[in-house]
Image 1 (cartoon, rainbow, N blue to C red):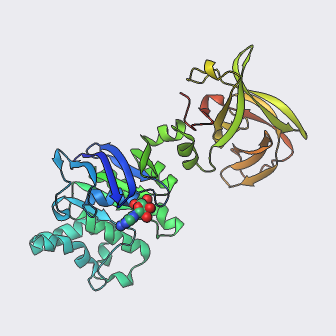
Image 2 (image 1 turned 180 degrees about the vertical axis):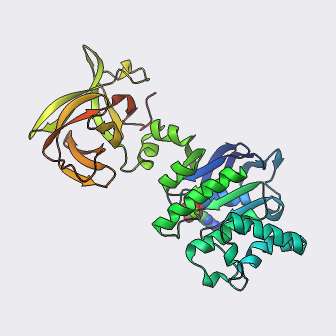
Image 3 (image 1 turned 90 degrees about the vertical axis):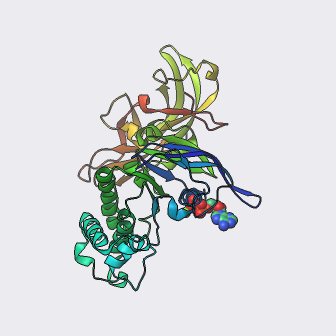
Length: 367
Ligand SMILES: Nc1ncnc2c1ncn2[C@@H]1O[C@H](COP(=O)(O)OP(=O)(O)O)[C@@H](O)[C@H]1O
Ligand SMILES: [Mg+2]
């Protein structure tokens, strides 16, 4: 296994700059997720690491070896694609062993390696089948087996679970996590699914238009997003963004919003005293207060207030309530199931220690 360093990586197709100078440093054994919308350059970056695309500018290294000009087959990297890319005429065993065979690994050694990997992925009973006789999930397992059997220094995954149904995707996600724990391998995993990113990654790199917005642990990305793009990308339902003026109250700095309660708009002061940012320059100006739905609860921490409930959506584990602040929808997450009917005007509490503040012009976090 090895570290992976991407230094100022640029990719241009003609005049179009698809990657605009990406810097990412991965430690040996780290699981990095590249998260971003379709077209932001995730696959391009992965293909550059694999050697399937050239590097226009910058440097990619594995360990202390620069690999820009190293042939893909000499990079000691294995890649798992969304499309599986299996050979339809070969059995599962052959598919898994194929790469080893190309490298001239002796038959007995190949068979041992294939069996070990098949057991690890719980598909040793499928070894004689052809891909056409497998389900989508089983095919994805074969594709993973083919990568695993080579024991590469770095694993690359390009949206490997996108073609699976929701239940199977969950199972395979757990399996990939288990594999990473077991192998302790360096992995780069591309997805547009924020839940996959949050659950799998040691660190997440959020890409937008070929630029890394934030590279940090899932907890940091979730709790301290660097800008409104990142804040809106992770979390479901997404963070509430509430425009509000900063004012000096007797108790300290506050942000004032109006809340619809008993059919009337009532002023509410959001306490900003726990914000790490120095807000003195912001007094009298508008900021965006970012609050995740779970920071607005019932019987939780923080100041309490009354609010009319516009709509509720019970998900089973918890219930989402749509409230009206400043005339806009604000989502609250209440931890009660179907049993309790939530409607009318109710008391909520708001945990301002979990709020993020953003500059409305630049959309950057104030910190
Ligand atoms: N061979 C190519 N020639 C020109 N543009 C390309 C080529 N391959 C990818 N692109 C463009 O690069 C951008 C990033 O693509 P890609 O890396 O596939 O995005 P993602 O995997 O994040 O969906 C897209 O706008 C895409 O159209
Ligand atoms: Mg892609």
